[in-house]
Length: 636
Image (tube, one colour):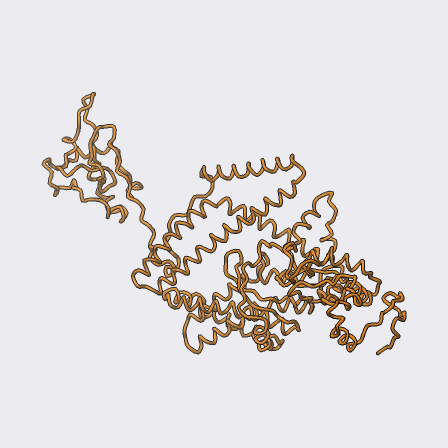
């Protein structure tokens, strides 16, 4: 409906108050005045003074996604995404103010529009306060004196410990939407039912009849096939991201770009689906599960390739795809399972609720506003998740610190052997083996580097939190420092004193193809040391071991018991230095093969040996029996 109003007349304004709308010159009058001589003299500046109210501007790249549908908050929340990728939550009033800013309206004009949409009078002073004190600190608008539209450096940025870093765009928004539109039909209920049914059938055949480990062993014997499986795994990750994008598109939202980054230290991929927050809880959960669902579709495709070609490395990719699905469903870190749980609770950032929930549980502490703002069902879900995850994370950290010397020693030893074997494979022209060795090296480097990175980040964050918490309280800060020093000292003493577990001994590789040049057999045990001469003074050749495990004489003639005795102070013959032949012969075959192989040939006290003395008589053998000789348990 169009209403004509006389210039200067009072009309009902926002909230029912009368507002005077001045008469503005027409386009022809403005053209004539700006083209006349008065323009050069600056007369138009006096006739049309500058507006008396400031004109706010939105930050570059800001997108308002509307109300957060199905949220777990008692009050409605609205989602806005800044140009730098940070997502902020706004109240309804702030969202209306941000939506009314177009770079042309001043605060007075914005107040008129917001008052009509909000249903209550919002004055120009209110708009100025909300812009300067709320929206600008959040990075939604830029300060008035700033020339560019980039987000101010003082705007809050969430430094998430377990977030993706170093984003790089692989597929822009236009290309992602085109591909997602072409794949959206896979999310129809009939197709989902068929895909899941086919996957169950293939799993029953693969694990129950064919044997899932058989293709894996086949691939491990051929390094080239292992590289092919690696390429298929990367393809599965890319297809996984298009599952999120296509599910977002199927639900009515518009997906953003697809890119890659670093999660801790591991390369990972991501999909921008921020717009999904406006389509309801069911659409968000479908988007969260879309990646895992496309993993299932990819595994079915690999199974079809196996039936067409007979190549078993396709089934090996199917086997590894199951572990990828299980990993994605873990709610511990920011993977698909984390976002599924967050959307079930209606809370977009579960990690951001850890601190307020723990502080609210302390006796005598009031409930924090971040917790009181949650619905009861959402509060129960988030509290159970916090009480489960915090002990697990702290337990993992304590276990890693306690076993740090063992982890570092074992990891460095394995990495040095891996790098040496990989370099040797390349030096001998084994390109495929060398490339697989590089993959094995990365599999060793990533956990070690990730653990070091996470330890440094977590330690720095704990230190900064403790310093902020003890600011203004010198006694509390001194107590915290003493407690930290005591903990570090106790841990260092446990490391240095050998209380912590020892490094693992060298073991042959389970997958030799991933570790070229590394010995595939366990190192043999060292040969037992030769016993020292007894107190009787009998001499034996150093380093020589008899067949029965006792010391043997040198290469000279073997003495008989009567000839091999030496005088003692009592005039009685001493015990012979060697065991009786009758006792040593039965144990010769019981010696371990490794020990027998390392023994030098020794003369045997048998009648065929070249000994100048006659063979021992039964009487001399009987007299030698009381002498100590190794028993059967010592010779085996």
